[in-house]
Amino acid sequence: MLWRAFSTEYFSSSKQAEQTRAMRTWLERSGTHPLSIQLAYGPYDEAQNEAFVAILLHRERWQHVQLELTAKEVDLIKGPMPLLESLTLKVDEMEHTHPATTVNDFPRLRAVTLNEADHGNWLPISQLTSLTFEDVIPENYLPTLLSAVNLIRLHLIDCDPDAASQGSIVLDQLKMLVVVNSYPSNGSQILEMFTLPALHTLHMSEQLLGQDPSSALNPLITRSGCKLQEVLIARACNFSEESFRAAFPSIPNVTFDSQYNWYTEARKFRDVV
Image (cartoon, rainbow, N blue to C red; front, side, top):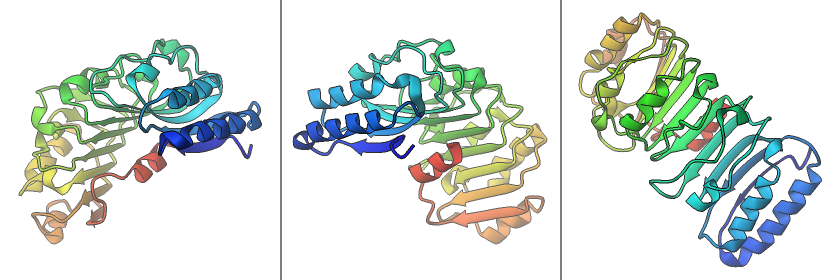
């Protein structure tokens, strides 16, 4: 049990072989227990590939996994992962192939984070309860959301709303929506795409609400018929806290967090698992 979870990052070629040996020892000592692994990539070389192959040999024990891989390493992923509950997959190329898996290889998968051009059509989207897209344009993630009928949490991180196309995404069970960007943009286009009857919690970057938050939020609330209970607005705002609370008196919990920045990995990982 002591050895069932570990995190490793490659800092230099000189350390990679040593880290790979340590990781193999960790895997051996974990016995048959489910694994929680965080693997971050560095400059690619054979030692890194050996490390990933070592982890891959234990994929049937993966439970919570965060992987930063090259496209070549993604191609190596195949076969059933019967214990996998949460997966974060970040690939270092904008265009890459997806793992050689089928939706039946992930019977327990519930939480997924994907980046860049990956739209997740190789995953069992309909069984997911938490889904995060990072740096993915709407035309790539919208088709996936049409099948995400059991989502409870949706995180759109740096997914450029200016590229949003007109669409209609109805997520009947979604309780938490996070839409945050690290660059100035108009987020009302993203909100216009959604109907969310069960929405309870909304986290947004302040610039996504523009100068008039009422015009951005009221159509979503009216269209969805939802009863928002918590709104968190990140960073300093173009409008006062008092004016926002006055515009939305039915929302009991409103927070303005200047330290929130955009959306930290730590908070996201806590929310997922």
